[in-house]
Image (cartoon, rainbow over all chains, first blue to last red):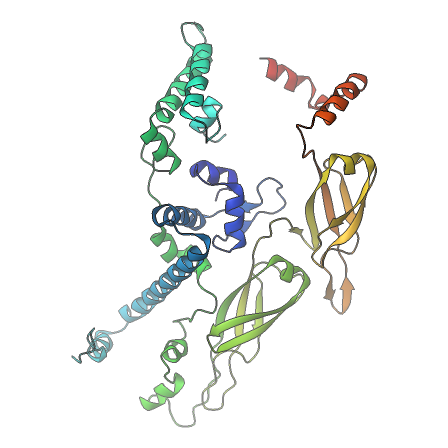
Length: 115
Length: 321
């Protein structure tokens, strides 16, 4: 968990008003620190990684604010699906072999052909 | 203390030109050169730090890599943050799109592709005749803005493009609080009651409002003239702007209270009331104004003040050493 100053130190190209805008856009969701005047927000590791992701996307693909919202929205959906898939896999793994086999048989092959 | 950036070591701005960096380096290198400071290990350490900082910043390629966060102050490769492990890790849930389906609830998964959930079970012959079960609870997360959290209101939570819940937010809701909407969860089986929707509320931070319990705190910039002469100025509150009197002779840090402008809520039927605290911050704004400078030159001569008096002897000695 780090505050804004430490974050700005880590990414030399990051400006305070820029980060404020990202938080307002809900691209980054820091936790609100209680009471402390200078450091109002604390950033967890996932938030730091997200700041780097946004900086990377912007630099490498010259993405503007509007397109950034779209890109992040799509990325969040993909990661959400991947998390759900992982949970489904975990649940499948815990099934007895005959259940897993039955599911494997029932799954159509990618491309639409039946097994 | 955190490590200094090479810009801080050389005392230059992060956007300094190569020329400015060279000048800053030469000046500091002369000042702390070991030959000019024999037997002073502190100066030698500074000299080394300055040389290392210059080594990094004088090389355009290294400097660019440092600015991009690829290498650290010492020039060592910084570990790349990959977003994926975070997104898929325990903290990743925070960035889940609102109203996303929950695979833990198979009905959600089935309905995603337009199939019956509980009914599909009946086709398989597993759900017995006359079996009655309450529906499952469903979990959602909803992010609301700071002002809605303070004043309460309605917020729509979309579950899918054509399904939503209108959630009533009570005033003064807390971060992480869970709202239960009875009967808005999964449908019951065989005439059983529907489950509940459990909505975990997250409050987005606000650019200038801050909450302490039910009180609202805000830092208000005021001009030098407003602070010295007093003024009536508009102040934002969670229920809209109000006019506040800045008393004559106010200073940075002065705290004014707007009674009843905090979070108002009903507790056991009775209205509770809280306040908004406004902390003044004097902003000069026109620090290069020649008229103001001229006035202050005369004024300062007649009114010597020391704003650092309370920092005491210790601080003064520390600065001199």
